[in-house]
Length: 583
Image: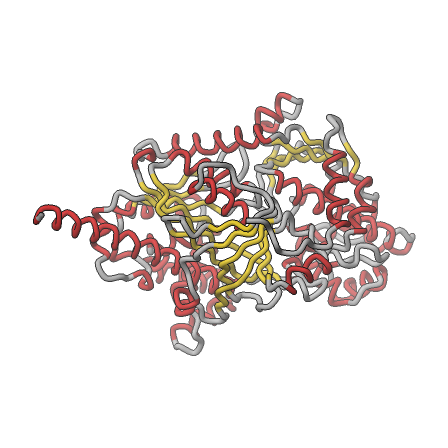
């Protein structure tokens, strides 16, 4: 069916994308400086003040959180899909230090001097990395210019490394940068104990990133995905994927396993004691309010949050105990190695320990699941087009796809942070297709488990190419057509779904019906960003503990759907068997 949704006014964004892909055709290093003009010209919603001389603090925080701390001294960034690619071209990453960003999951290595290697899983990583580096460089150089006076340089150089700035020092920095005091305080909070080191680096020299793409063909991405799958098979040799039906879930690495294993619930007293001993005053107060029923928060969600804090502080023995408990409930973990960073978990449904389950998963007939041969295959949600590669690879290597369930973050044009959106229409900017599908979830499936937010079903989502690759004109076109859910994975996933139910590759620039699918398609997004509040984005704050509310509401709905579907399948099979015997 020919596409009828309007074209967006995205000429500036298209120019920016064409510019950096044309530069990346070079086999050598290219300068990020060549992209500054087109980056500023696209007027990104995430970088609304790029053209101003004063720093855009929200954009700087956003990019700082998505780059490893060694970015302060990095001059060259190299991109590739596999370790063999890096090492063949002279970058022995196996000898380098593995580094990470606080708010972007991507395998990264630093040579200890000035070169950073980043693994990419699809072209979406390029569409994410380049705008992030460009925005960071623009804002770095604004601060460099603002602190170039002898008085400012003297102030910064006398600061003690690792020192948290005092109120007076915040005020001095605020005056030097020409920014409100609260903006400077937000920036220093985001940088934490790296604040002084970062300020000194910014004062000392301008930033001039160079970039080199080592490989970027579609074949390279497919090879990387194939290695990822082979690693999963190597880590779970006892599972015969070829002959097992699979419920595919794209979510995170904590919610499903916490709900399934109930480990945190059985460690309740240990976690309470840890919170008291560690001095987490706010968490302890929240726990006491929950126990006293002074707040409506979920006790189970709180314990899952406390478990993460406990494991981070307790070391290898605590992790080993948790993994052993998970394995008793049929959970196997497969951490990614060497390639792109995408962990997976495989749950054998017939090893269910119903007495351990989160109480929200209690369903009639649940003991029938001990007869199931199905698997739940959960991955840590990928970025953009990697979703297409991953679902395609999984579907090629399992016996049957029994259901596909996607949980992820999204920006919302009409909701609040923490609200949940359930779309039935997805426009994909990668394929230019508009997908229509029967979402297996409605508001009634999620609302009973969401305490602090609202569930909006029958929504329309748009899958964008990158977080920076949007501006107000671009968004307004979709908003006028009722698109309010902005995210990065649903479109690529649905392109893969099309190829699961049709005998050809997904089309381009069409309205596509996925109603003929014989398996569940469930997509649930929770709002983590409200981009129409100009200049305020994920860099401006975090969902923190309350972010557990929409995450677990969605995860509970997904697991309840999977379990009820599998129970119905087993009971239906028994009924068919009885009827055939009678006949």
